[in-house]
Length: 378
Image 1 (cartoon, one colour):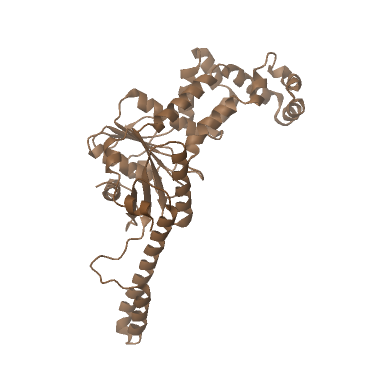
Image 2 (cartoon, rainbow, N blue to C red; image 1 turned 180 degrees about the vertical axis):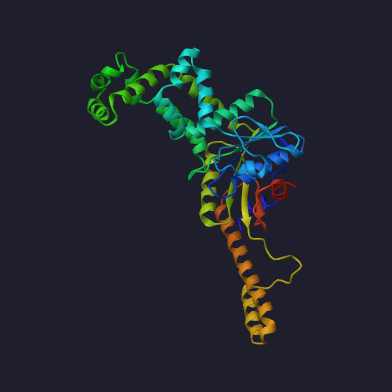
């Protein structure tokens, strides 16, 4: 057992919900990030802090757990919980707000928002969702209306896209290929031929035949209208990144006791450390609880041997034999998960390790979130 694991087991996330301004829950999909985020927000609100939880998960589980019929791009108060709001990111609407903020005048903003390429890009371009999540986070931070902002990051194979996406999006908007759309004379009617001067003539002529001249015209019009706004996007992304690096922020990595999820959690913890992000801890959900402390310690091997003996005593002893076999299996699963957690944290200090046991029922309401909170913070 690693020293980091032993040390981390002495902590929970009470300090996080007591003091941190921004809490980001990250981890692979299907590990309970949304539930963890909602429970942390509930804990912060219970401590008298004005709190909002923002989900980027389109599955709407957060709304169901908080007893809300729906969530949208505006904060909605959670009934029965003083000081707690919730909202779900509307990517298109948030992008429109960003355009309104950075455009030099309303006419230019309207020209961009009605462009066909913009309407497609604002809903589907890789990294847009994560960038808009950071934009919304910064808006909530700037208004000063909340003591605690909890972010439920998108379900994705690599949850750290939340950190990488803004850079990828701004790199895309500044790319050499796109600069040819900004050159003088790159109007729709001359786009394919004038592109030859940029070494892209063959590509543009082929693209013109495949997509139609009108589509390329939309592209040119969009990027020409967008010219001069790149610095605003880039500066905002840097400001959010700087906010996330502050001691007032905290990243909570969420996983389960399965080896693949723990392997990804280890990568997340290492990446956060290398980026200088303040890691608060690791939450391992749905952990198999060990047998009650009051039971005499029985090894799986001894339990199975006793079960075999009981089965020879007749039908009346078979129920006891079945229970012993269940006990043996449970002990083995608990040991395997504990070893997997220790292996994942070898050489890593997670700051805090919180193990949330597998609940008897699915968590779908406020009492369930409160029960999770009993394990996340004292």
